[in-house]
Image 1 (cartoon, rainbow over the protein chains, first blue to last red):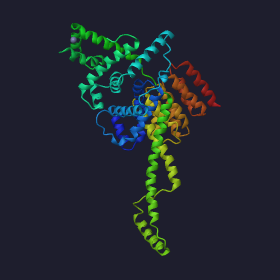
Image 2 (image 1 turned 90 degrees about the vertical axis):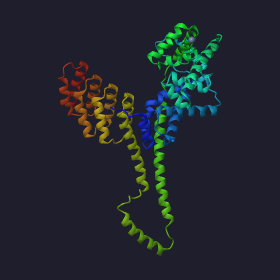
Image 3 (image 1 turned 180 degrees about the horizontal axis):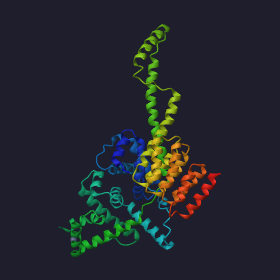
Image 4 (image 1 turned 45 degrees about the horizontal axis):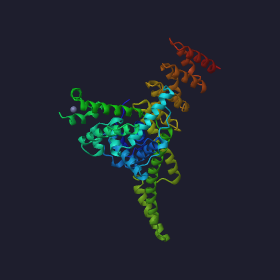
Length: 185
Length: 270
Ligand SMILES: [Zn+2]
């Protein structure tokens, strides 16, 4: 069973075989969902944003050029969807909505509670990073994107991304420490 | 190399994007330089901490919404093409003259013209045929989609393709062949089981019936064997008796399957 590349499939979608978008959906929706989840901390909102990404891919399918990795193009759409959402909602998230997911069963209740607190804290720290830094950090930490690809996605030099992600991690560490009640070094 | 050069590569070091040689350079530097060591330690700590944000699964509603959006989009595209055709038709109607004499002349002219181009031009479809054409289009779309998903590399994509084929009224031979070969040779038991379910829906098709009977001897998983036996019994397929008998001759047949096959033969032999 030989799989077509994402790019080949997207070219088919562009050229009128829109039903093939389903293959791209099956391949990528969990990844994009988690990109949004880490970016926003909200389960429901992230589902809505994923849906928006695929609507836009259809709408702008004719602009797909087939250059570079499909995922770079897809994350570009995803970033735009997120930015538009922020614009509409002036950057506020419903913090109540965060992490209603049940923890895995093997954890003891104490451990689960601790983990939940940890998760909330790190998510809160993340949300205090400026959007661009947050995006770059998430892409490199969780979405298997290389500096080169992130640079292509952001339309800037690789060196800039390198430095910016480095600063983002540092800054995140400071925010996290602060939230924990410690003193930033 | 300066400390800031080294520190700039820490994230790449953490994500494993550096070569062995470059990583060695980092390790050698931090062994000597306590500033950089402290910096790397604190970065590593927060980097690891981020790991609590585990990958999560979206709800099922996301998939449902996506597929209905895709279908709506496809139908809207079809509608657009149809409107364009109709628009052309009504513009032609406006050219129709009021006076009977001219009407007659025009009709005659059109008749001649029609005879000439009739061989080349396809007839503009009527309203009802457009509606059935639209329904057919949905079927065809689902069919293509199911077939292309079944061809994909991951088991979840293939499962999705099989699920999609459940919704078809009358799948074509190509898709049925695909489902049958999936049943016989897919590496995943779950995918093979889903194929049994899908083929059950189309068991009236002679090709499917034969394929299902033939498949009994090819299955090694007791789960798939059990599903096939149950299917034969529920569609009362008497021709399966022979296949069940030869299944019983297999060495190291799972005792539960043996039992099920024997009962199946009894029920089918009445
Ligand atoms: Zn140093």
